[in-house]
Amino acid sequence: MSLPKIRPYPLPSAADLPAGRVDWRPDPARAALLVHDVQRYFLAPYEGAPIPQMVANIARLTETARQNGIPVFYTAQPGRQPAADRGLLTEFWGDGIGAVIDADPRAADIVDELAPQPGDTVLAKWRYSAFQRSTFREQLGSRDQLLITGVYAHIGCQATAVEAFMRDVRPFLVGDAVADFDWPRHYQACEYVAQRCGVVTTTAEVLSTLPVPAGAPR
Image 1: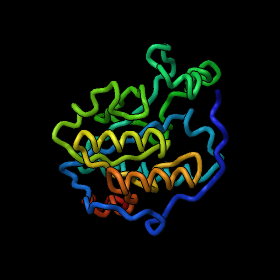
Image 2: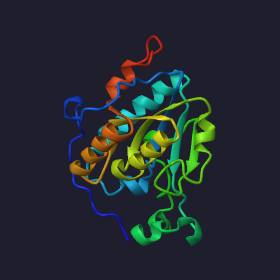
Image 3: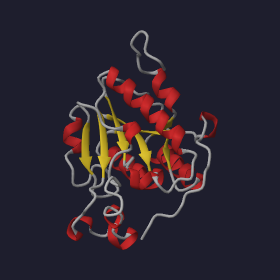
Image 4: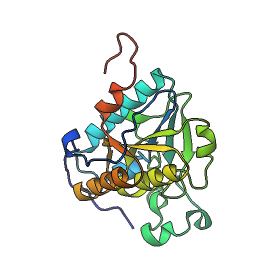
């Protein structure tokens, strides 16, 4: 089954985000950045906003993370997934990227604007959470904070945040660096994370906690 078209909606501002329960702040020595499922297949349904701004915000975060020695991780679903590997996802979503890969050989690619750079890590994505069937937690090592960006907020981003919490990794959902099927689901993910497992923040707030080398743009 194909993904439905996604009508434009605005990204939240800091004033739109739900209040939280904890006052954690990102620490460059403890944080890692996750760019979740920003593949051509998953962004194709959007008919405009909020994708251009989301992509621009993620680009700012990845660049600044690299400048500060913060590891950058990506998740990406394989283009072709054997039925045994895809499991129950097929019953909910059909063949996913595999249904369109013949017509669009680049469907599984991460969008060009956010292409991984040398030193970044790309994790094969098999389930909603980036931690499932992967070595993600082991690769985080002693880092116990995770900045989460990408799509879709109420599915994989939220599931990853919940599992990070259960693995004693503090999740930070960057509310204007994620996108969803619509505004209600976007807000739903932000509210759940803020109330149950992490901090919801903005790109500007994250960048304000990270030193930027002289001459580098914010």
